[in-house]
Length: 75
Image (cartoon, rainbow, N blue to C red):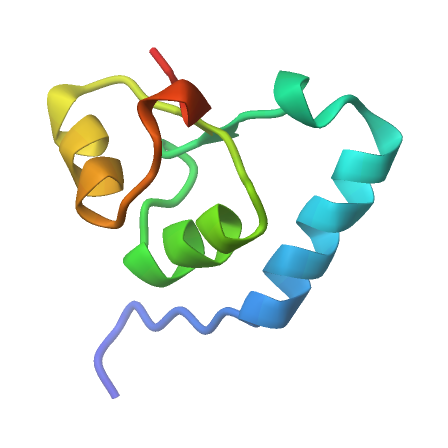
């Protein structure tokens, strides 16, 4: 196994997003790619109608590659 090694529970990621969506207005909640931009996590969040905050064109292109609507991205 290579290090560092990260293991994510994508179901838990989606479950946590749904909990946050019930606690705050979903349109005001944005996931910062700076926190973790693994494609699997981004796809899991996208599948739950997640919004994203980016800081670079590279992050924008990564989101567009997986089909995130520009409406769901802030910079």
